[in-house]
Length: 241
Image 1 (cartoon, rainbow, N blue to C red):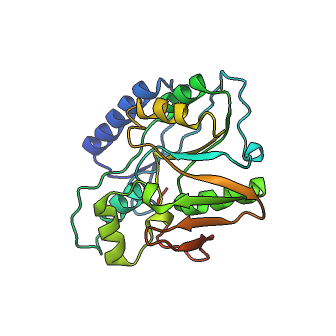
Image 2: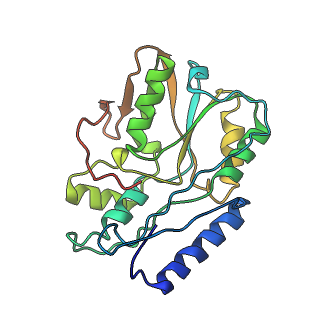
């Protein structure tokens, strides 16, 4: 949906970016439609998409398959998407080199599935951030989880901005990040397969499923304390993804 008066040059830039993304992800556009609405009725441009995919693998991937002992893998640094968007808002007068981590992850997932049939669950780490997603996964599987702060990749710039604004990177939105729950015996080879993919070079094993429970997620901090992670009952940031 385009706002009346939207610059053609901006539309061309957006469509070129879409073209590159589709090519990399090996996705075909089946159909599309365009509408123009009166000036002031929308904020420049809205793009809505739907996709259909096929999993050519018999691996059963579901939060219900998470087991005690599973290792938890993360494919890279957190908080970059949310803070890169935040930095563009007019009320924030600071500059940053952070860029959104938006990425097609189908090749990364394919690489993981090719080396292990013991991947139990995969989840994108988007709205709500890493902490929220892990709590949801723990509650869905009736397990308790422990993660280690020193194993979670976070850029120094992300830490700095969060400290300045009073935000927690564990609850900042991401776009190109996933958590993977895999049998402990296969964790290392899945990790190595992830690191060979350009969207998983900074992958780490960040924790494990400790025991059956009611969905508790515990962060082992860098100073030797334990912190229980829970859902945020208020939003740190407006919804941006």
